[in-house]
Length: 358
Image (cartoon, rainbow, N blue to C red; front, side, top):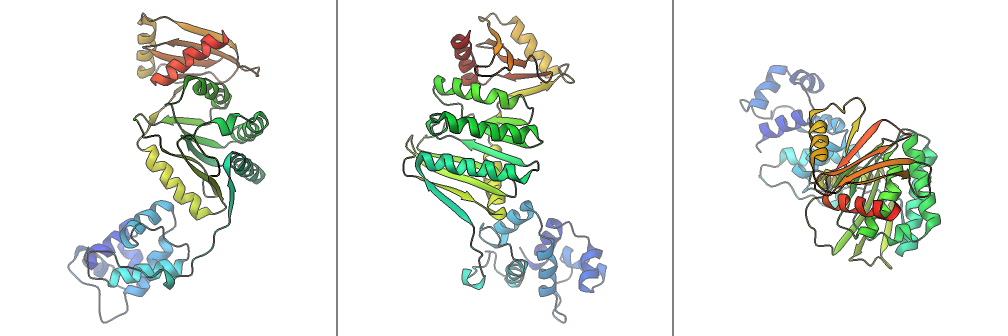
């Protein structure tokens, strides 16, 4: 970018009008317009770059702006929180005449240490997740949460006391206005999928869970678990294959890191598809829903049906499944909502679920 393109980029990124920048820097708005168009250059007779850099640094206030700007001026490294440091980066970039972003010495900035808890192995993973749930519940306010995991599930389900406590925390948050986006891993053994269904259906019943899945194959070697509480904190861990023994688990108490990991989640989410389509009683006349229901009713596959309380609960569930047509789910005593999925592993797991509990 040349200098005019850089100013235009910053103004577009921060949604700044010509007159706003002109008033802040004591220039005529027509000059700013000509500068943006390339008809004028950055003035040399008056100090322009440093005040402009300070103005734009103070306008960088959300994660979208921070990530776009970090890609353009800081080699993709997340911008520091300090406005003075951001101003310095913008100043260097505006003064630089080369096409490549300037190399910045990290020693030029005072980086803030981040409060991080670390634990290890399955027990550590459970402790980290319970601490996160406890801390978020203590806020006593609704939050947005983002979660995915393709690690093996034994760490989550082998300790019933942990599973119960975690589920109670999550149910409490969802019932009090929090929202969860989750990317499920469907390439699991049927036994694991049946367990997932049994544990997650009560959470779906709250209407506060938005589920997705990644439709393509992954190598299954490096696996990852991530839970982000928007703008507050996050838990992150990795494992190799099915073995997480001795592997570190990180709990970050940092708004900046939570927001950065949310960007990671959203990039993965952009590759995903809805796992379960949710239709309320108000939109069951939706043409797409009616087509799915018509195809389901006309499909000659064997019908698997079950109406009973979910195991260990008093939640009455109605399930209907046909292998080629998908699965419809309703909570008899809950919100008038219909859940539909055609994801093949989900459909097969639902059939196994019905066969196990009918």
